[in-house]
Amino acid sequence: MIQVTCALIQRRGLILLARRADSGRWELPGGKQEPGESLAQCLRREIEEELGCRVEVLHKAGEAQDARRPDPIRLHCFHCRLAAGEPQAREHKEVRWMAWPEALGLDLCPADRELLGALYRDI
Image (tube, rainbow, N blue to C red; front, side, top):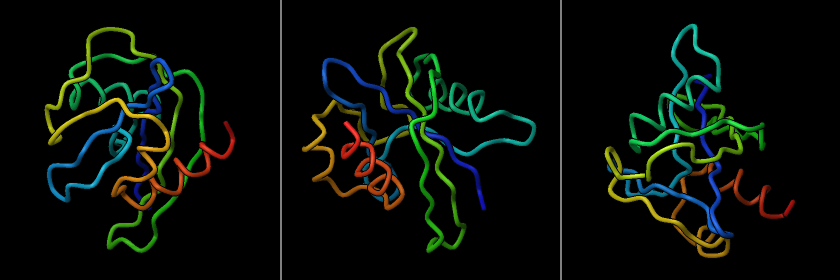
């Protein structure tokens, strides 16, 4: 199973989501863990590469998996705080700050939908 990280970044009650360039689905930003990399290191690297900003990884928010994919993933989500810069769509079609109900109404990647649904119920 491929280990993938994602960032739950919140600002004034909104969460940051990114729209994938390949499928057009929405997701929490992040990416695949490289060999020898901790999950936190992976997330900081991926956010800098994909969004051009830096985050402080705070603590684990939850995890989900998608075993139906040809390459099954385990998605590790962390609460993060923007440390420097503003998120930009470098590898995504767009990035957007959204309210939780709006985010849950989008065409989300399956593991992100499961994760966001669970996190929203816990708020």
